[in-house]
Structures are given as structure tokens and as C-alpha cells.
Length: 485
Image (cartoon, rainbow, N blue to C red; front, top):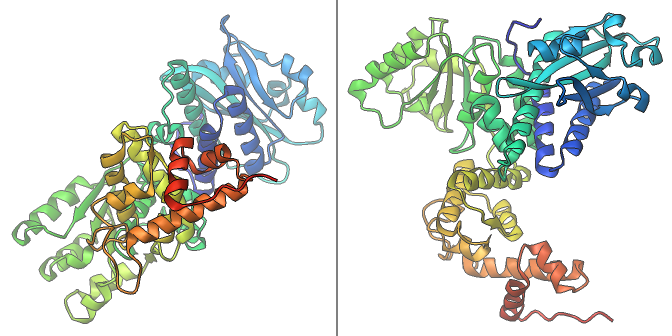
């Protein structure tokens, strides 16, 4: 029986993230289940696996299987308490076994004779009710399995599958099912789930470093430009550490009244007892309070994380930052790259934020592909914060439309480049933004027409336009539609 709560590592979170992606691609339950088992094969090299669901008579019957013969699947029917599968169903807890007599009802063990099979199970729950069991067979002859870690991961996936089945049964599947499942999975706390889809090597290295640092008590400084997600990475470190489930308090030093700072720091420290305190913009901490923070950091009941902009070193060199605190924080520093440095991630980030805010605002607008392309090629100066601001303004102003276009992007109050100028303002040495938008849209239309062999209905579908919207733009830009010869 698994009693101790354990933590998912980065690799296991990636597995969970790959499973979440399935719910975006497929609506059919059998397809979803089949893909889940395939992902376990890809990540864990399982010999076989199944997902069994409760039948009307109260027995468990395999719904989807991987690595089994049809005759073996037919024998895989379990009553409550029967074998490890039945016990998992009865008790609602993950279990592990290696004894052949507990595994061989299907005949799989006999067929795979010579392999040292271990059997891992986890309940599939809708609310508090167990409705099924996820079971995996793995050859452990070459390695000793990390049983608790495997069972914890299975439990997370079982919970995801149960939540999915519950929402589907009620016909309440949201437009962004993966985001909804993540919200149910961890109460919305893992807001940085999209980080695991990053294509940038530095981000991948940061995730691995966070994995190595998660159980150390040393302070960690997250540095980088405004809006790159420093606090998100800090939260991720807390959520994957042994302090997960304990308080995560945030103290933003900027704008706090100096005469109350000591009082607020004391309050936050007390509230973070046993957990983590994140000091945001630590460079704005007044010199008279830096020694107070340093003294408190001797109390290991609270782990201190901090974020800083790119001006911390300058402030230190000017003698405005306590050397001992500076050296303590800089001992482990993680610099987060800006969007300019990781342009390949902008598409994923922008779509993630758009989906998130579309659901929060309850609108159904879609994004024209050229909007994503333009934003990816022209990232805002304030990085992810700027992306999110742009998304919120687009959806607030144009969320009632069927399709948000480049023209809508032009009309939002703030430029995606940041800095406060409007989109229609010309910049020195560059064409007016309106002309850039028009040229980009025209280029994409011509490209889509060529790819569609000048069949307008196909080109419109590629672009996310209706046929009428495409005809309007063809006339507007004077684009000739060549006749097929």
C-alpha cells in the first residue's frame, strides 16, 4: 500500500504533459485510452498495459489493452478484491506486485516467461468513486524500479482519466480540455505546465536544474528581463520540492511603504512557515531591510527564493545592496532567457495564453494564423507579460468575433512591442505598422492560395477565414486568383 506522498520529477511531468496533449487531439474515449498506453510504452518501455472500467454488474472489464492477445483480454474480468487489479478497484489505492499467482489470470506471464514482470496499478476515480483501474506490466530484470515514483505517476494519470470520464459523462468537456484537466489535477497551481513544451535548449536545461535543486534548502535567485516568467519557474521549483503542499508566500518589494516593510516581511515569513517565501524584485529591497532578510534566512523552516531584474549587479556595485546577501543569493542563480532569445517558443506560449484567457472570459473567438506568425516574429519587449497583455486586450475587445485578425491586432491600445506606443505609430527607419500588417496578410494569402492550387475554399480553410472574408481580402489587395490549367 502506498502511503507516503512523493513528487513527480521533470521527466514524469513531461509524460503527464504528453498525455494531456492527447485530449486536445482526440475526442473518442477508446482512441484516448489507446494513446495513453502508447505513451507509457514510449516513456517506460512497458511490456503490456490495460485500462479496465466498471461494468453494470459491478465487475471490472478491460476496455483498452496494449501488448495483450485477444484471448488474454477476454479473460481479464475482475471482481472487487480479486487479485491486485480487484484490490486496487476495491481499496481505491495504487498497488504493486511481482508474485506470478497474482498476475497470471490473463496468461500474459506464462507467454512472457523468462521476463521478470512487475505489475503496477492505479485507480481511475470520478470524484471519490473508483470507476476503473489503470494497469501496467514492466520487465524489471535490467533495473530496480522506483516503485513509489511509478505509482505516484500512475495515480496522477488515473486521476486525469477519471476527471476526463466525469466531464465527458456530464457532457461538460471544455474547449481546452488539457488546461481544464491540469486545473483539476493540481488546483490550478502548476500554471507553468506549458514550460514542458519548450523547444529551447536553455529552458530544457533550466527544468533539469530545477529538478536537481528541488530538495536542497539553498536559496535560488531567478534573474532575467521583465516578464520572462521568473516567478513561474520559482513556483515550479516549490511545487516539485518536498515543500509542495506547504505555504508558498510572495513578497513583492516594489511599491511597498518603507515604514511597513519590516512588519510585512515578518508577516510573510510567519505565513510561509514550513514552505517557501518568494521575494520578488529583491533589488528593490531597501538597504536597511536587507540585513533583516539575511538574518531570517538562517531559519531553515522557510526556504527563500528570489527574483531580480537585470539591474541587480549594478545596484550592488553602487554599494546599495548588502554584499553578504548578494553573495548568498548569487550562489545559485538561474537566468531566464527573454523571448527574443527563444523565439521558437513564442507560438506555443501565445496559443497557450490565448486558450487560457478565452476560457476564463467565456468567449469562442479563434486566432487567424497570421496573428500568431506576426507576434512570433515581433515579440513584445516585456516578454510573456506582454504576450498575456496582448491576449487579454484582443479578447476583451474582439472576443465576440468569430476570428481575430491582424486588423484587430492593429486596433488594440498597446503595441505588442511594448513601450506604450500604439500599433499605428511609425517607428524610425521602419514602415508604419499598418503597412507591415497588410504586407504580412497579403503574403500569407498568396502562400495559402499556392498551397491550395488556387482553390479558394481550401485556402480559406488554411487561413481560418470564411470564403466571404477571403474574397474581401482578394479584392482589397488586388490578388489575382489563377485558373487551374
